[in-house]
Length: 292
Image (cartoon, rainbow, N blue to C red; front, top):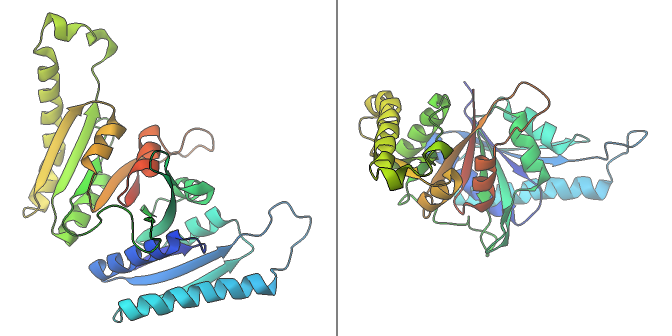
């Protein structure tokens, strides 16, 4: 089994936050850390274009400087570096993640309302790999991750009760246990259109629906509570748009976990709207876990 975390570096201000988060995660897991830089050559050139030596040296220096910085902060951590030239960044990152436990990427702040910029590389990489991908937000000061990603925050998991959530539960439970923090599981829902006027006719109808959903959620969590008996789990089925409910619960979280359905076809949406919204607006690190 792999025991390595790979973090992609692109020279942006988000690198410091993502590499720092990945180093701490590697220590929690007892894993090695790999620093990876991909130099993306033009894909439509009529012939191979040699990488300018200055850019090659810049990439090597980026890796060396980051490794030196992390080695000083985490002296017991095994850190390796790798540079890939002449490959599409998303494909190279996905390929590198194939035999890693986790792929970590950075994102940058757009503004207090616009949220965070994941970028085309991150958005293109996530659908190409079944390895969990963690997006780490750079705070205003460039070095620290945005949000309160310390041990005091919970791990927040957003689930869809219509999906197979086993991969999500496994990942979120393990992350919460490593941090010795609570796990908060959120299922956001809205009444079906046919029940739009039901609350006025029968005020108890929404409560009955909520109780049924909460019972379903508790049933899905039952085996995981048995597997992780020391883990404090707070499960909630709440009325409202799922992304909004997840984001509200994620305020001050150590980590937010959301899923994306694995699609075998080339066409179609590969990152659902709920996961897309959480990726771009959560301040805590966001883990995207592929599931069937």
